[in-house]
Image (cartoon, rainbow, N blue to C red):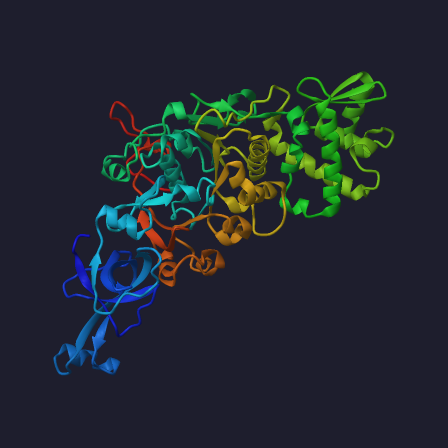
Length: 583
């Protein structure tokens, strides 16, 4: 290693197999997160054995020795009282080489600062790894990596990213990692070919521009150091999916992405066959056992009729009458429904109308078909009322036209817009739940499917039950064997089901709320890093992975792809705005 001596191992503080202290030399600058090493020789079985201790500086102390009272500080400075200043650094050991030696470094041994690539990778236990994901730049200027085997399911899976909204850059960093997977030279081509990603875009329409150049990207040096191709997401790799316009189901609902985009929607027949009704309701509704009982009966009934129906509809035949359900919701009155029924043998009707009629018209057989006979009338009425409220929000997503689903296996990157600009919280949950259902129950290929979900606490909260949460738990606990990997981002890990956080091999955080940092979800942080997490700046992340017992601090660069309309580079040198923003 390059001989950049910074001090010696001290003997006045105890060294162990996990920590030691350095007496830092005069005129040497040593910072927290610097990587250091100690080399020494020991006699082992009558043979000299070279041992190297690698570690990361976790804390630094300075002070006066030789004075007993705080009030004497001025006198020491004035030269009245003799003193000696001390400059100490605490080091947490990351690796002892060769493997198998678990001994502390010897006091008095020289300590060197590590700044070269090879020794850095040894210190972080990333040498001799075949597949690595570039994760950012370390304080010593060298690249940091994530071991692919703890992401792709070989030894572990799933990534959890936490931090304060607007400061912690969670979405930006998750996107950076996906870009690294696809365009780095440190991951083998055969691995990259099998990557498929699902990115749920929540905030406005920001992520609908990642196939375009970022006008603020000027320096590719950091990307060169990370061995990542400095390119936007390539058009041949990416597909954009947008909700349909409520006024025109064949037109995308967007203000910023009219070109090269696809529509997603479900037919009413899909809605019945795949039992998507479960993804309509709030978690509070699902905590009512009676409500669940009635909902389960209705869902199963719709599935049976949808399966045997022709066309994109659900047909229910009763006494020479055919109720043809072609939508979820229409404005209606009971008189209008009765008029439809009296005038036609085929009654084209919305599901909300049908449920209303089945509930309140005691002379028809729909009630006993759609609802369990033992259910309380109040519970059935609650379901019908709640269904109509929910159906209004998602009516434009479930149509009589042909279904248009996400072809997630075709492109390597699939951006699915569930923009809060156009979709309510209920509609967002419905889309996420329905797509997760399709992937979880329909995956048959050998590809690895990475699902990036922002605001994970909304879909898998720490308490309560819901169908979406159940799928996410299944993915967290069994997804690695299926090749389904979760990349979850949330402001507070404490508000996400702890089983999901516990099953994430890779844990990352940006700035944390001071109260949030004390939860056990952040036990991977050392006390010093926990304190630092409360005040780190945007673009700085703390990364923990199983290969290294100590989390590392890193920064990630401004990306070459645009994440907002204002960042898009215009070919004629015209630009839309000036400053880049990390979300």
